[in-house]
Image: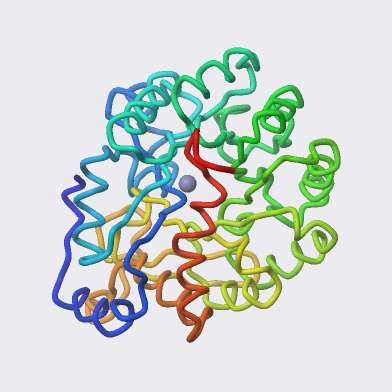
Length: 340
Ligand SMILES: [Zn+2]
């Protein structure tokens, strides 16, 4: 576990006041990255130092996850959808094997990370043997430079999409490009995927990386004709305006909760402008803004802020809470052998 992770009386109070009564008895966290130190030993320190997310959390064993969620969500049964850490320099094969082991030992759901160079036959073999329930491609896999302007088909080939379509394997897509969801190339690629692969289940992670209302509005305007073909996870999205817009425009059965642990384990909040966010944290990360000690002392877990905003947007609809926090993901990411 990360030594910076700690829970304070303020967190307990926040949980009791804002979350406890509104959380369902079980949560399916549809976005968490699991690995062991040996899977990311080759990731250069400068890559970690240059990436706030990796700085916050690059390691999480299954046992760590159990400890984090037990501390954060007392009385709630939390199950993960286990994703490997999709990093160019990571040992993806070993990380996938680790996820397969968690599936076998603990019955968790897991996604297979694919690289563009993986032949479809090998992916199919690993997917079926490991008992995975979907694919996790990632832009990093086409280029080690995080902000590289790669296209979707650079990191997931048409042959791989055709395989996902044939296997009925959901694809959790982290969109590339600085323009995020509204980028015209991304919108065109999403349309092409849905047109060419009619059975494909495509989930856009982080609401298509839309962390602000402006960006999300623009992106949704370009997807109106295919919103009934897409799912969205809300991992690492904190912005209440994004949640309000999501529940206004998207069928709630297509929205999935996710934490993005171990990235989002710190205390803090976010500020937004039209195109992006700024993380405010209490822990000693390089991006710490050093606001006043009084302000920083008042921060709770950022995942609590996320959940409060999500629950506020849902409102007094327990059936929607259950759907978003468990049932939608359970129906989409089916364990092999489960009834269709
Ligand atoms: Zn993630």
